[in-house]
View 1 (cartoon, rainbow, N blue to C red):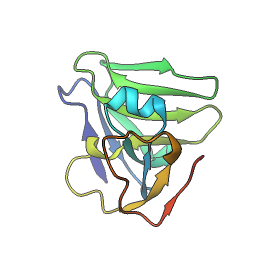
View 2 (tube, rainbow, N blue to C red):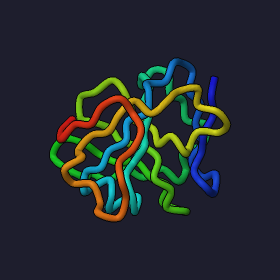
View 3 (tube, rainbow, N blue to C red):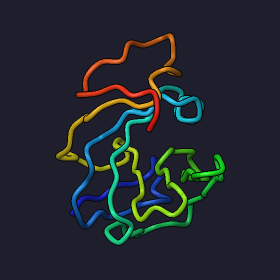
View 4 (spheres, rainbow, N blue to C red):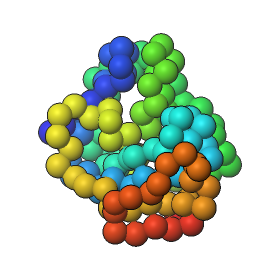
Length: 127
């Protein structure tokens, strides 16, 4: 089991299963929300348990997904595609080692001009 939370603790969670390798998303929405690119892992919804959700707020970010964040401290936490049985989790929100790795990058064509994409086995212009 792994645990995680937002910065202030108003959202905390447990992960009771394996995590997907981390994917770095360079889309415009992720860059606007995080100030950089988003590095996220994921798990099955059935393996994600909220132990504190008072601060959890979901924002409908597009016609296909919503984003979860803490309404109190502003921590970016989740991305959820409509109809999916998995939830993406910001890797930095997980306490301690994630026991996963950076697998690759997506939406590279919209990467910021202030950094160089490095690491990972692949780069894609889409998901």
